[in-house]
Length: 305
Image 1 (cartoon, rainbow, N blue to C red):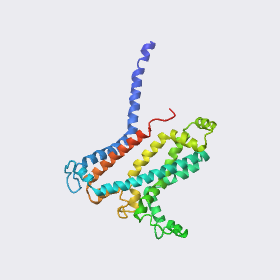
Image 2: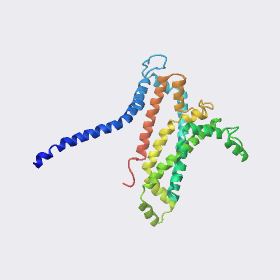
Image 3: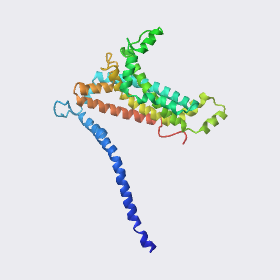
Image 4: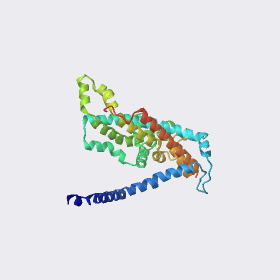
């Protein structure tokens, strides 16, 4: 009797699992739809258009590798790529160094939730709003930043109107906005480090500077790799800050980054096929750089293992 009464439990468990699977699928459906409709399909469509002469004025005309041949011989493309690289180097270098300093100070001096909120506050401001605010502050004639510089005797600086100042200025604007988020990522990594390693180092007579160089930075390597990869991908896709501050990639093309050039080709000149080819090239470039960063920094392994 005990054996016969226990047999219906298996079908009931299977039915319950199927019910859980349907509920899980229901919750995943919106995210899956968004992924397919707004990421996967546009990516596949863009790859197809990169081999065509599509311009919104007619049907897509297959052109093979013509767009990619044009890209190789396009001086504006190479110039915009160089401008983008300059921006990326400044943004990543300054942002990572400042974020690491802020994270270490928060970890050593205070763990106040309020302070973390203050550090993160600029990240909650959109790039467009941040760009407009800094455009007013740095205005050559009326900006309060230049007013302060003139009061200090430095003189007014055309931060966004001079070819030499424009890219560093835009990079620092984005550093101001994103450094808090990057610092909190590093801060979270610092909290996961075992204190026993630091205690052993202090017992051996290591100074704070030596502990930072020999213990903190090596143990933070996976977190730093994540931060560098995220920052690098975001830096190569900079657009909105430039669109707000310099509007047309000026002065004299000094801020004509790759994303802005792609936008101008697609929506300014209606050359969607060529713009798609540049987008595919950028996607492949980011994939290669990300893979190289991941391998060189051994992001998948920790010194704690």
